[in-house]
Image (cartoon, rainbow, N blue to C red; front, top):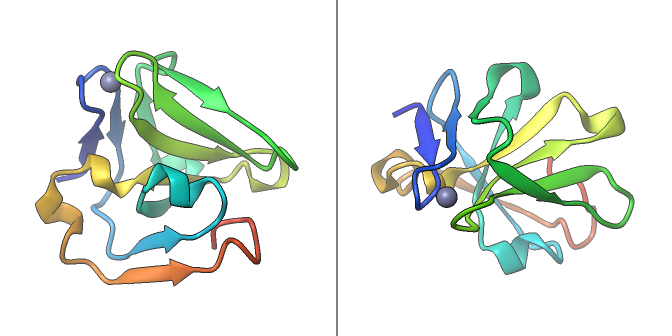
Length: 116
Ligand SMILES: [Zn+2]
């Protein structure tokens, strides 16, 4: 329940506890990715293997979006700079029963571009 994986199984994301809410953000990238974000402190998240992803960074360079090098699934974002203590795990990579019934926060990232 505390582990998510991409489609090909090449990248696993382990967290200390399943999320209790997820966030649906409408910013320019999140609406395209279709991800639901579960936020964690960076220290609590293990990505294996660490080199299994490639990243996309743009704009004010506050976040790096990671995707599996093999299957392309968006696995998580890692905060950069002042936001380095935060990770957003793509909750859709957990089994559906983990996230499908959770309260979904609608975040207006189009107006305020950092996930909150
Ligand atoms: Zn993959």
